[in-house]
Image (tube, rainbow, N blue to C red; front, side):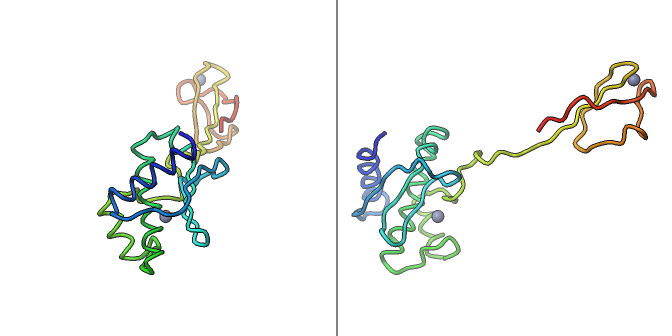
Length: 153
Ligand SMILES: [Zn+2]
Ligand SMILES: [Zn+2]
């Protein structure tokens, strides 16, 4: 999908689900990182994250477009256009928009650190979320000494 196609799509979604025209610009912005899309208060334009479409498909993409259009129409009409506003919540529910616009779901990598230990006697491996004191903890099977192999994060 290119910018022209995005523009047509946003205009179409606006007419179909909001019954109102989208009269500004909708463009892709590859520099958006954790943001799925954004509505810009000054220009009234909408920017969409191309990764949103790649990663989550058209269904999710459409929901973000609806979310941004909620900001758009409410803002232009002088109504409550922020996430916390009742107008926003009501309209969002009505059109079935995504609840979030500022985080691409799943893109924030959860960092799970795992420390890997091995018993020096029997070779049994242990995975621990926390560092353990190898001087105090011994192998549960043979009471052998543990050594740290590596940390995965
Ligand atoms: Zn939003
Ligand atoms: Zn052991």
